[in-house]
Image (cartoon, rainbow, N blue to C red; front, side):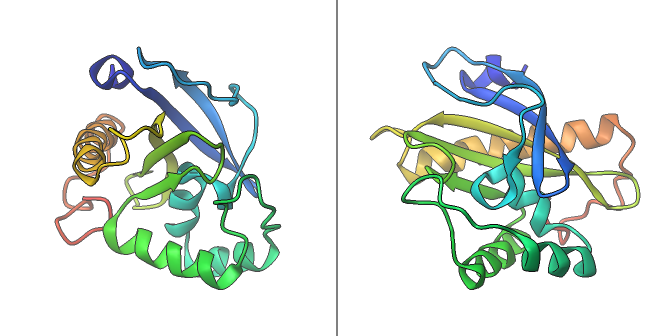
Length: 174
């Protein structure tokens, strides 16, 4: 439904070690070459899906993972410095979502939101991927996608039983 509504590729991914693994991938109408296959691991540090899931892990898990990540460059835009990655993760926790501006694949941008379970643990993430064009790099464009994706994430959490009182206005991602 999200891919149909926006025209862009929608992905639902789960955590797997130092990777996220797409389990649902729906392509939209927009021409977009995404070299992600269902079940193919994507590095945490180089994708919006991975960064948002990493940002919302419990503190001990977060620190342990950050210290063991291999920050290999996949594009010239990939974050390869641990201090810069940690600063990005703090920003993600504050605003409630992650972005990937050609960090995983050149020509592709992405926005992702965490999916929390009833106990407020990040169990998955949902994203929209879209081509990096003059139109889509405009802040107003990304703001519209963020609003749409936030609503989809909230809807999904409601459907899986995340209690409304757990996701408040002060909570990340709400």
